[in-house]
Length: 140
Ligand SMILES: [Zn+2]
Ligand SMILES: [Zn+2]
Image (tube, rainbow, N blue to C red; front, side):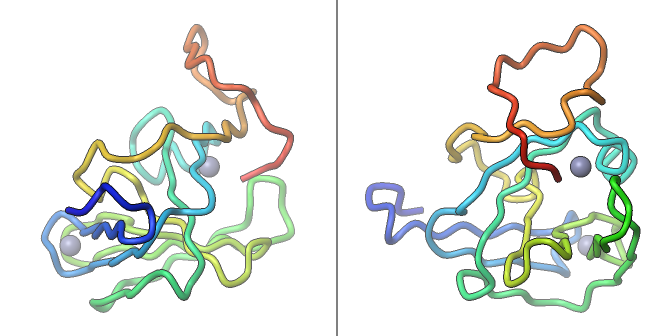
C-alpha cells in the first residue's frame, strides 16, 4: 500500500468471498455517510460510508448480481451490485451521478480513508447518534 503520494494511492475493495473486486486508483472525489433507510436495509448497519470514484478510476472484476430500486426521494434509480455467492453489496450507482461508482468503504478492509465530508439523510439517523459531521444539503 503506497499511502505517501495521493496520486499513487490505490485501494481494492472485495466482497466477503472475494469473487467481486473493485480496484480504485487515486482518491475518491466524494466520501459520504448516509443515514437513509435503504442503505440501512442494504447493509444491516445503522448508516453507511461510501467512497465515490469516477468510472475511469475503477477496474471492476467478477460477475455481480444487480438489484435496482427507486431512490429515497423517488423518480431516479439506484443500482446495487452484489455478490450472488456471499451477498455483499460491493458498489452501487445512482442515476444522478452518471460516470461514477460508489464503493462500500467497509469492503476495502483498511482504515486508510479521510473522514466523510458529507453526511446525508441525517433526518433518518438513529435517535441520539451524534457523529459531529456537518450535514450537507446534497442528497444520496
Ligand atoms: Zn462474494
Ligand atoms: Zn443511503
